[in-house]
Length: 314
Image 1 (cartoon, rainbow, N blue to C red):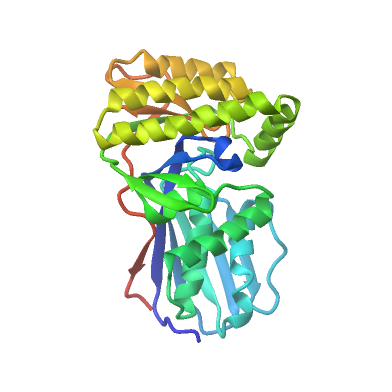
Image 2: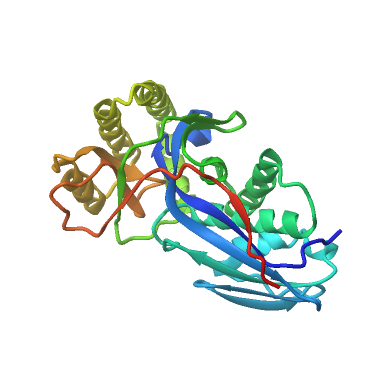
């Protein structure tokens, strides 16, 4: 049953991986963080059977009976919409705005996938159950990427900082601390980087498994340190894990330069690659005191995950 007659908004925060990249795909824990920068989807119902999507990545126009061909830049939106279109009686106009670029590595694909699924649940009058929403969003991302941990989905959905393990859910932790992120200038493809790591793991499987075990142990140590607000200890763990990611082969000269530049600042407790590697961004724990030669985005963990707001317009 299609219910909303007025416009509404759904928003979700972006996310950063703090620990556990690649290891999380092999049953280990990850430490993931929602960030203050949000992606917002505004949906206005229509009275006909047409629908439109507008975003910085492009635009779509179609009908519920004849959706447009899938476009790579909007594939997460289109694939998320697809299962709901046959159930809709009338169309809609969607506008997608974000506080961050899709090139930064802030989990924009996860955030928009969650927002589209939540919006479709809302317009169809279905209960927005977070666990169920995670499952359908995870299926969408997995279908498109072929491999996914779901860690970025969990952070955007629940907010804050938490431990994530595939199939085990999200365990929230203390998250009131400063961060900064530096975009490397290179956009990397997570599936491609994962493929590179998996090829290397195939040559040295026992060694890579031990690296993944150390990454998993790092998450546990960091979680205990966060419970005591021991940021210096957490920062030291970030530093070690940058070395582990380098051992996996996913650092570059530029990423290393950014990491070491951040570490030299007295306000930074530790820094490392965030995400699959070979591009995207570096995360630093703390607040820069001396500035940086690289464009740096200060931030804090977002305390709120997915949010639904009524706009009251018709």
